[in-house]
Amino acid sequence: MKELKINLDGSGLRIGIVQSRFNNEVCEGLLGACREQLIQQGVQEADITLATVPGALEIALVLLHMAESEKFDALIALGAVIRGDTYHFEVVSNESARCVNEVQLSCGVPVANAILTTDTDEQSIARMHVKGREAALVAIEMANLLRELT
Image 1 (tube, rainbow, N blue to C red):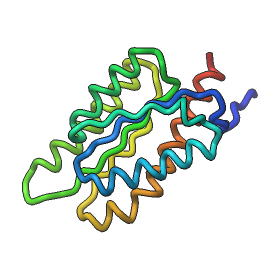
Image 2: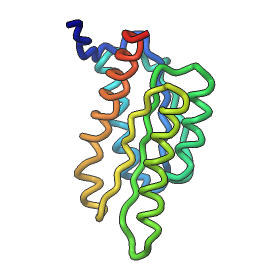
Image 3: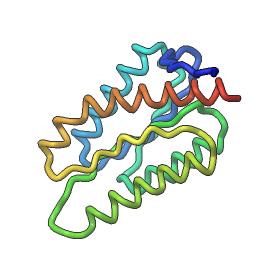
Image 4: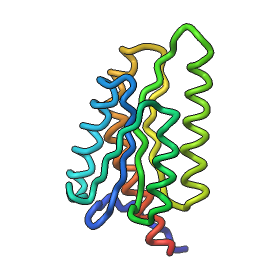
């Protein structure tokens, strides 16, 4: 049996990041951790492209354009949806996750989803660095896996 090994070498990979500006402190924390991990894994700064959008619901549209451009090996979605007093939290959480997944399935470009959905600001702040780093590793692993399969 041929087993495909995990490959976390980011050398030569082109990564696109779409970051929400809503809940900016958390999103900046996600981005900092993500960028740091990408570089640590060998992705060159010049091979990382960042686009920012107003909120989590706008992320998928920019991801779609990036995926269709064929300029990126993997994409990363960064955002934070923090529960409020209305049903809006559920709508934004569910739709942003669905649409991000739809992009990768329709275009064949892996998308690491690090749009946090938490109950409180404190939960988001506690998770932002871990999730940012994890998103970078997921993007690299999936880009390399798809290359191996092709």
